[in-house]
Length: 230
Image 1 (cartoon, helix red, strand yellow):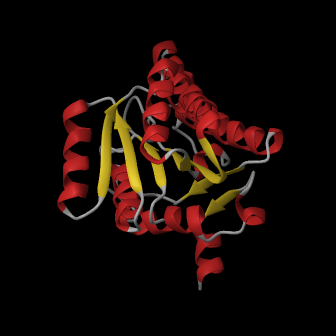
Image 2: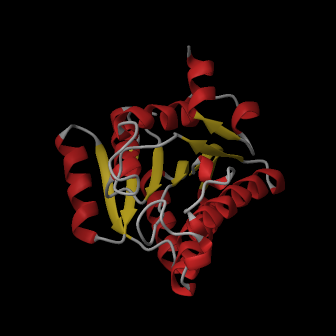
Image 3: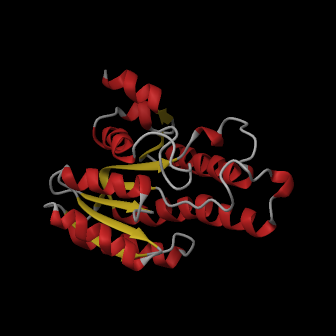
């Protein structure tokens, strides 16, 4: 990734932070964003203290104009964008305890606006600035495909995000894929699951080593990653 530019949304903590750090360690200049300015600045400072290159930007993926400015900033750094990781997402309520039968309209709307529309904006606004061999990764999970009870409109929004990734992959010649790292120990999971630093390796592999045939328009889960890299 030496000399490459990567954009990671939702990078102030959890998976996004770990992916940003892994990409920076691999040599990329990482442009990272989140809604919390102080938190995203702290991550960028941590990356730079470790010898990496990072630029922090406060951006809300629900606002396409924020995302447009983010992508323009990233392109100005390296001339073009080599990797995009659409990771920003929210979950309203206690994880696994938000069935659709009890979901509020406000929670439904913000899940869709952030997790689905935000993914759409992230990918769409990156397109004018992408390198010819750029890769776009959308972070997701099995709740997007399997009927787990209690995940309500969060699961609906992640299913939509995966459909958005497939659609961009089908409608363009870009490599757009979904990365499903399994349950990860983040605030969303209640701290249970794989270490974010471990799953960051899966995203790094998808960005740099996975074949286009394996990734484009597909979901690469942890099992397949292990199989492909054994």
